[in-house]
Length: 340
Ligand code: FAD
Image (cartoon, rainbow, N blue to C red; front, side, top):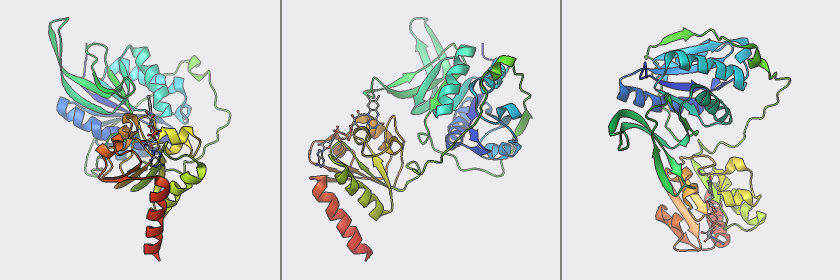
């Protein structure tokens, strides 16, 4: 069925700037393509985007498919999906990776259903391996293991898709590591002429308003996060004060976000942001698996909790059993005194 073993990555860009998640996927895609001894292909849609080809090659692509057209200037489901569906049907990639961003979550299922491919959302790891189907008495070689938490995060599932290719997966920003760009890498650039249908333009963008996020949890070196153990907005100010004293960002568990102490942009975890700070302070956070999914990779973790058996202590490097309303002011005072 498969005419190629190529690994494709959908490159998301906004105003000519490549999304971090796409570069992260190129890093992972490079490993997968090397393992399969195949090409890593970057598909990018937009308008006046010629300049993107070179960095994509530096980040690992062997080939860049550039669909450069005025109708692709802004993301719209149908024109973007049309370009991808036509290319996938024509070239039959083996694997197709997409960022689990709002755009990726719209684009990937549209393409998957049109080409009748399997799609696993929000993978936390991707590997290549074999699969033995006992039912068919057959071994499938070199399938994509699509690994992700399942059943509310209580187990890690490995999903394979032996027949309906390409094997499609989405991955959230921050989960994979960006490779170091190599300015000496060479690759091919192919201009793609989109073949739109009139119905692709059912939706017209009349006006557009954008706002840059002021929160950058993903790249923060220090994060101080508050959880359900914080009971009042005043107590949440202690989280903010400590973050400020440490020159870090404010994070939160879903419990703190649901309580209205801070906006969802600050949520760490499976349905929030995946972070990799050098220091993560978790105050009043139990350490539920869905929260840990986003912060396990932190280098040093300080946990403050009244419950000595809280699961967060299983992964913490420094464990403070105590009331955050007493512990946090002491930490803030000590830091302020040191700064004088
Ligand atoms: P709680 O469970 O209320 O725990 C509060 C902790 O604070 C307890 O350990 C308690 O001992 C301690 N405490 C209480 N008072 C004090 C005090 N005065 N001082 C110090 N410690 C104190 N959660 C996320 O965080 N991020 C996600 O992305 C996420 N995604 C999810 C996705 C799914 C599909 C599901 C089902 C759940 C998800 N959740 C997520 C929710 C998650 O399961 C937990 O409910 C949530 O993380 C609990 O937050 P918490 O530990 O801060 O609050």
